[in-house]
Image (cartoon, rainbow, N blue to C red; front, side, top):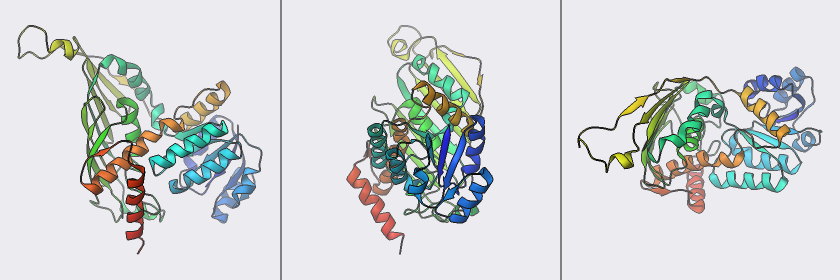
Length: 357
């Protein structure tokens, strides 16, 4: 696999290097708007470096890896796709659901693969949870708790972090995209969101904490809480269905199976106070999902002409959910998904304008 890298000066490039090595890929050229960062990366890789995107896209390669800040993803990804490259882009796919859908349309038009670096999908316990999900019956509850504790100095490592103009959001758009992605992957995209966001600790324009009540299309209810302002559970996702339930935590999946589907139990005879019997199955031990998994999967996907682990069209949902939470918190009311495109454009424009003075 021959690669060109857009935004090689980004802090995440070092996470991609093991993946590049794992599939014996060759980086043929690198790009960054910071010429010195591009030069250093090119020297380390033994390849040309440039600050000109057109020059980069003239090199013969198979995949463009886009690592620039996510506000720039739509334009950069579109140019790479139009140049004939498959694209692997860092999460989040985009800042808005509208942009994310446009990027997917560009990939379809170009006939190229658009993959997103949502490496937590590769965790063995997540793959197992997806396998057993159909046995849980109809969704009744889904909950997410996630914590990404950060020192405030983290947000100073790049001036765009935690700003409306530079990032388009806070914990929901950046760190929490992994968590929102897994929630949507397992439970489906919610239909209605009622949310609150806060700046609890860090010097941000956006938010370091978000909480929401969620409703799914079938009426199932749930909630989420995501923060960078507390040391809490790293991640816990619970899904309760009519026939069983699961709890997903890093490296572990716990699964309970009911003796009867609750829809049958509710109308059955017997002690009206007795809960349905359930069995706790042996826990499933998993592990980390890494960029190595992303690159290995992408290599195989291109060779087998199949979708990658996280194709672009499947990565729209966590972006859309982040948009809905931010808009609901701003409006102090319910927001339906998909989010009203014009309303969200006005929301972002207002926050960018008010925070650029």
